[in-house]
Length: 364
Image (cartoon, rainbow, N blue to C red; front, side, top):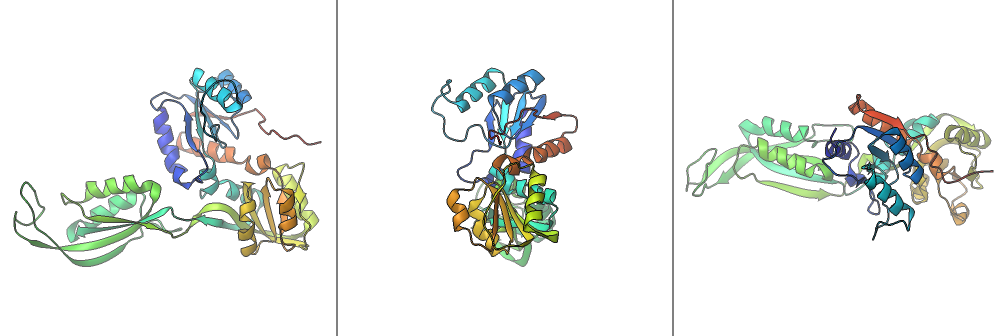
């Protein structure tokens, strides 16, 4: 398989436009035209993971956490990221990372946590904004079916759990062909009126080039009139964190035990809370303190996340049970998501889980 083909597929499956502004998901090392024969899936890229990759003969590492997170000014041996990049490049190892875009995806990390915990009907806690666009174009009546089919197949027209969404308004358009034109109808130098359909639909920002290409290819006019508008609408299926309900309410002690067992967390920290029974549970893999207000607004009894500070436990309202069960512990299921996606798409491509324990934290 060629690396750029793999990256193009994964970029479309877990869109890079879903990542946070501070993030650096995507291809970290590797030449687009290089051949990849097998992949190692890991949460973190460490020197030990690079060594494992070399031993196993893998040519690609797919990770959750990017190895290049802060800008690099040089590649020497002065820092861990520099040493990792140097060894990867020296051994022709490509590295691809899917971080906050995987957190935000509809099949992302928090949803996986919810399923592991057994929550019912989980949904996105904080939907992404400013990732949608509206396309408006004008199509001759006889060609509307061809154009809308092409645009929808390119990824447009999805709203929540509905697809093929569009709006159609019949009207009349005018144009006057100039010299050196080849109009579909009408005569050069004469104004022509054509029965047209105003067609509107929505698309993700990352699908813009693909959708516009489909529009221009399928449209019968030489010059295609279309408008693109940025939208502030939320997308309810994409975003950070999620919330769902336990099948039955549990008392606080039973719930904390369930959390510890589910995530294999040996060092749970939790707040002083007035919550005695837990039913509605919010989750966010990794550092999710910023979603605490969303968890409260959604009516959560408990919020499971990681990387909480001392004062977070002081500031949180008593009506919410705040739980920190570890960064590694809340995000470790990311590698399962990545593995399953790759295997489903490329069943004959060799993919294996890294055997290296990359959790930097020990407990006593």
